[in-house]
Amino acid sequence: MEPIDYIVESLAGDYAYLKRIDKEDAELKCVARALLPEAVREGSRLHYEMLEYSMM
Image 1 (cartoon, helix red, strand yellow):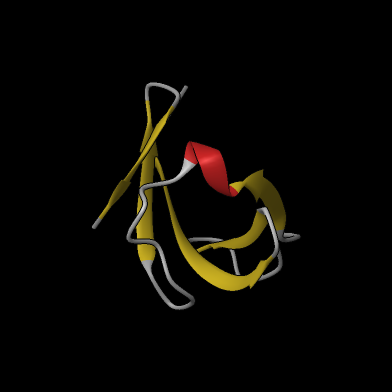
Image 2 (cartoon, one colour; image 1 turned 60 degrees about the horizontal axis):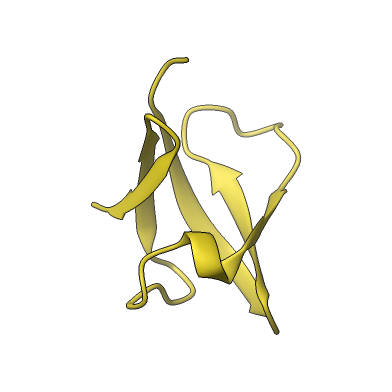
């Protein structure tokens, strides 16, 4: 699987909605906040690779 970069569009309870940086027309991806770094906030940039999210 290829690495993907995201921006956190919104946080809603236990979930975050992520938008791909490279594809403007892609749908938002809903991800459990437990899978994301603790410091994640709206507007944070995330890098997804090898089944892990990390802050950029």
